[in-house]
Length: 187
Length: 187
DNA sequence: GTCTATAATATGATAGAC
DNA sequence: GTCTATCATATTATAGAC
Image 1: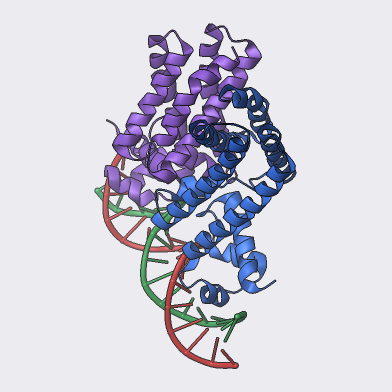
Image 2: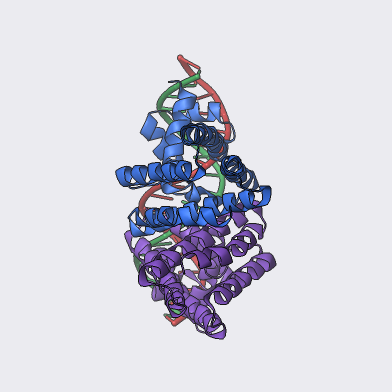
């Protein structure tokens, strides 16, 4: 893998786990054995530019991943439950946030940097768009699909935060257990 | 107000708005005209001790506040909607997180400091306990009340993050609009 | 209990050789 | 494109006078 991709991959993982400010450039550089000179060659605007590139990469990766899952399950309920299940497993394996959540970055940076806020917003909008599309194929109306997509995004992200504070995947599982009846309500 | 309370109030507000790492000691000190010597007299263990004290104070303030709202509305639905409404208004007025959300702190610190994680966890558990109690008086079973309390906590906290990235209170309003039917599902 | 001055360190960023 | 050495600054924390 080339240096730039290596930097992005390493930084993405660290940012997701520990947030933005908690990860120093030196930590990223050491983790992937790249020097400061190389980093500033690829990202002239430094750390923040690296973060935004990470968020954009994450956006593409998440889209690919979720679309693959959604294509396997015709039913929106099955599809979403399978997606959460994947989230639960990765949390239980790694003990940290990986995958479709980036709450650490959002809540830390949304009020601090406008370009980062925009990148985070694009990510959430894409996520909601994917959910929305799936719900529409399952007979939801335009407005109830979009409202439900927002609720899904919010409750999954919120549950992830509870998982972090509880050091347990239980909150995510509880939300998953409630979803079937909630999904039926608005359809 | 005495110096210690002043420090706690100022720091609580700044931490909620900008997170932990984004707020330097100097910023807190300057905002309330207190010197470093005074801070370290009251909080010998420095910034992290101050944060934990803030979280504990927040816990009490939130309990008082929510209990007051809940006492005004016998119906769980009315009570929770009124609570969210208060959140919406304070977001629209201030443009930042104030009140019952502390996602910035949680997601930033849960993986970094065990004492802070514990304090955040206590906060969420208290929140869920309050919701749970209210739902129980409205005829929910033990288990469906506790599951619903978790969903409420997660979806409100998640919606707050979407409000931050969208710079709009709409996500919180959408969640509020969906709540009535969701609350009916499990009761 | 509060003040100022200072320490020790870590941060992001830059310059210039190769 | 990558390296090392260095800079300027901000961070938390401490010491000691009052």
